[in-house]
Image 1 (tube, rainbow, N blue to C red):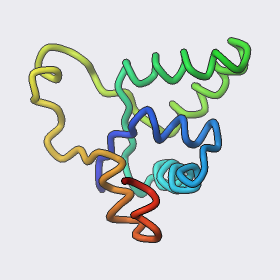
Image 2 (cartoon, helix red, strand yellow):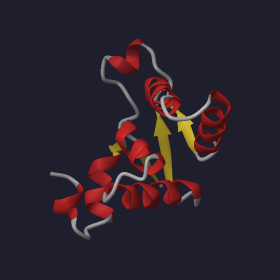
Image 3 (cartoon, rainbow, N blue to C red):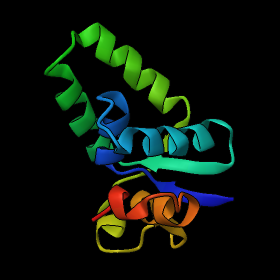
Image 4 (cartoon, rainbow, N blue to C red):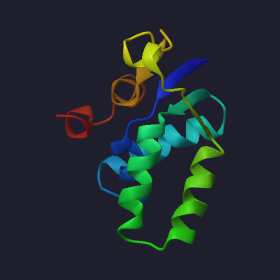
Amino acid sequence: MNNLLIDTDVILDFFFDRMPHSEYAAMVLSLCEQNEINGFVTPVICCNVYYLLRQTAPHAKVIGKMRQLLSILDILPMDRNVVSGQLIPDLVISKMLCRILLPLNTEKLMP
């Protein structure tokens, strides 16, 4: 099973329905939910997503959305080894995976 680091932008595309990327983000998160790929986020991604969602919704609603998200994604540890480049070796950046798995209109997906 592939491991996938879900970028902040992918999560925000999903939550804010930013077209045309939101449909691809939904597909990636759906694959995570179906356990076809292992989705990961970092603690920093979680904080950034919370902060940006909080600009448009109350704390309780954002926490609910974050709990739903984290029910299908795992949080990677963040320490000196990770930051210095020894992250899980087979992690794939989600935008790269989108180009491979979702070849429809990839030129529109990622410039």
